[in-house]
Amino acid sequence: MIAATAIAVSVFVAFQVASELMDRKLRDTAENQLRADALVLATNAERAGPAQVELPPYPGSGRLVRVILSDGSTRTPAGQPALPPVSEHAGRVAQGASTDLLESTDWDDGYIVYTLRAGDGAVQVAHLADDSPINQFGFGMLLIGLFCVAGGALVGRAVARTALAPIDRLTAAAVRVAHTQDLDADIPDEGGGEIRRLIQSINDMLAALRDSRRSQRLLAEDAAHELKTPLTSLRLNIELLIRLDRRGTLDSALPAESRTRLLNDLGAQVAELSTLAAELTDLARGDINDESTEVLDLADVAVAAATRARSRVPDIEIALDLTSVWVSGRPAALQRAVLNLIDNAGKWSPADQPVQVRLRTEGASAVLEVDDAGPGIDAADMPRVFDRFYRAGSARALPGSGLGLSIVQRVVDAHGGRAAVARSARGGALLRVDLPAAAPPAPIARLAAGEDTAVR
Image (cartoon, rainbow, N blue to C red; front, top):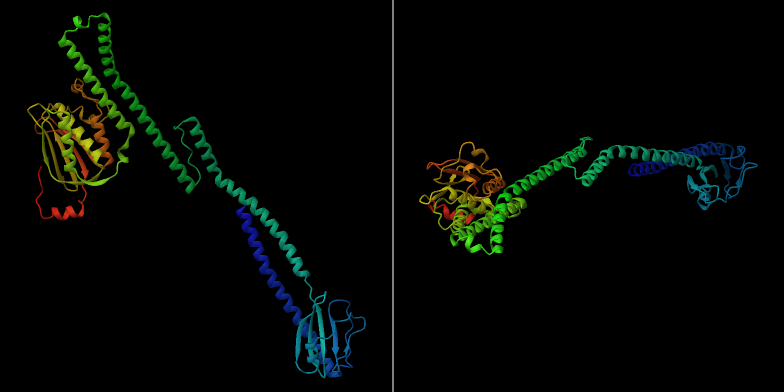
């Protein structure tokens, strides 16, 4: 439709311009012919006199001639149709008031009349204003225009269908994926330019959806595996208590000390399930990016995380060696990551050895280190420390879900940093996090310019 409309407009404009040019050309030609015929007749009239000049015979159509005498009377060839009365302006030409005059008649035949002074009178030559060439030209342009419009519409449709064919196939493929939920079928890369980039973008989106579905499936499988053991133990202990209570032998079969130990086990298992459920929720929601980013002092985050760790495990001892370092990040996510690092170190560090938390600046990075004096991590386990649900063989007897360090890795990745594990100088594990440092807010930067770095 656009192509046909554009061609129709183009043909119409061309017709208007060409018609105007042709009309002017034909009119100029007719006027020049009138002047030439009138000049010949006027020359003869001046030689023989207007009353005696021999008038050319009427040809039957087309040109008309007339002689105007000084007294206002006229002469015309025999058999020639009558011309309209001499106009006032033409009479003035015959009386010598003017040399010539070109005028058009208002009567039906539409003649162009040229009056030229000749002796003591004037001669007039009239030509029929013939519009047939313009009409024929217009009819021809109309036929050409209709043909071009129809051809343009067909060509435009063919070009549009060819260009949009990949879009049709892309739409069909998208509908098929939506109905079948099959994310493994890539859309063929065809077409060019914007269409190819669109198809590539959709294929990239499908690949991302496949990765997301795979990650969800793995998370569900790992969660089911990790939940099986504490749920089984919890169910067995509760069934034991119910069976003994129904028999009425609860007090005799379970002494107070055993009953207390069993209840403590139940409480520990419930706490373990609660921790696992909370960590699974964090991983499944993936809401790290939902928290707003701000420029903050990582030392304040570490202090808040250490405070929470002490409230959760009162016996844990934490030694802080913190330098004020500013980063651009999400406060709650960073605090959760530091808390997980401290909790992990607290499980392994002996009661008489504190967990050491250090924060400093190295180049353009903020470096946070958490180490303990425990047995350390075997070299074979180091590559998998940050994997979901991974727990070293020596850690399976300790409480935990195996998700804490994977959450740390996710938070660090979201902040453009890097997490690593090594052996500390005290023989335990050294967990290190590098984050991009940021410039402090302007008022704090001016205040810190004249102060020494603080150690907390």
